[in-house]
Image (cartoon, rainbow, N blue to C red; front, side, top):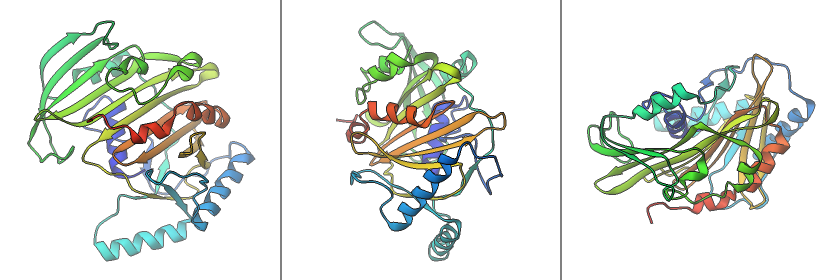
Length: 314
């Protein structure tokens, strides 16, 4: 995960709009020893490492437009990272040595939604949605960037709009790049976890993020998120092999190579992270108590290749 992805997803899923990142549990440093979930995961990790070192990254039908996650053994990672620092004099954001703290996945609740709904800056408009809209409420804020982002300079003012809905599919009027019918037939949408937000500067769309949270059987709980950032272009990312118990590069039914990582929390629950990036688009999942085969089924149902092609500015 690069720093831009880390920054963005935190704003999507955490109460404080100044924090953005895909995984709140990820920190820099060495992974702590932890019992393996099951032997299969060690095999998958080894296979992913071998494929990455061979230059194939495990993908048979890798789409040229998508960014790749490439796993390197620690020695090679440190060597390449050091060479980059020596040549450029700054830390590269496409080298990721993040590890997992062991914290359980925390989903969204009424308190989270209330905090997120307050938004940034000053509230200038609040509107109730209609049946035709899909979403149930909308708030429009005027704010200014505290640090350069969205292609804007510090201090420049922008308009941010936030939307509430019962489930992610209700945002189809804003974003129709995925088909959630299979997912929502099998999992219960958490209305506190559905979100959508846009950033507009001088009538030009700069950013959009859409997502939701879902509940399943036996404690399964996860969120899905898609974002488009006009000012960002995602490139390949290098990660240290072995920082998580499982690392798999899974090729979906529509030929996209998705990175899946899994680990075990301090309370013994499985936790997972999924990422796919390319162009200006980023897709992620984060959750708990979902089996690997179940994750494959979900990813196969989403037509992820369409997500990387989707341009909401058109």
